[in-house]
Image (cartoon, rainbow, N blue to C red; front, side, top):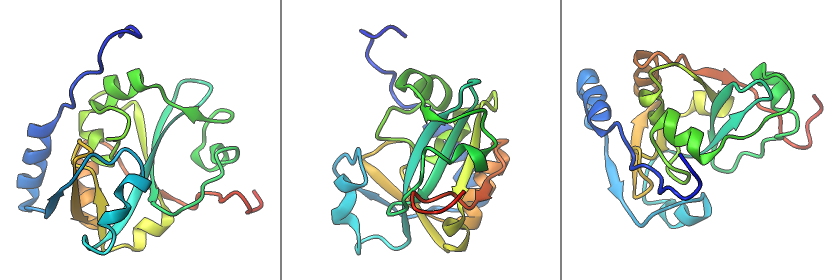
Length: 178
């Protein structure tokens, strides 16, 4: 994709519907204005049950990708996260082009559910340890104009069935010692 090309439309909606159907679930979905950042979605707090999340699409120096999902208010030390991810050297944000190619979504719509589009298994699935204790987790359903609420076990099972075993890790905060 060249810099002048428009990003591809999100893909995987049929796969996502099939994943929900295979588990026998019809999770609640709330439509809303496009939310590109955690701040954009603040007005949804209190109207949607469950833990709200943020996602980081990261890449290490050797080209390995990670999709990190954390509580929306979690502070994560990006200078040290590589030590718990098993990354080669420090990480940086993955490009929009890589995100579209691997996950089928554009920046602002990143979600662990996009891993259903990663057939090659190029992106490691990482969850902040706080999400392991959450009963309900809110994520985008491949687009940032809606929020879907999933039971943690259902979300993890969808990821496993897509070939992505969720790694639940204690991610370093900026003020924690390594």
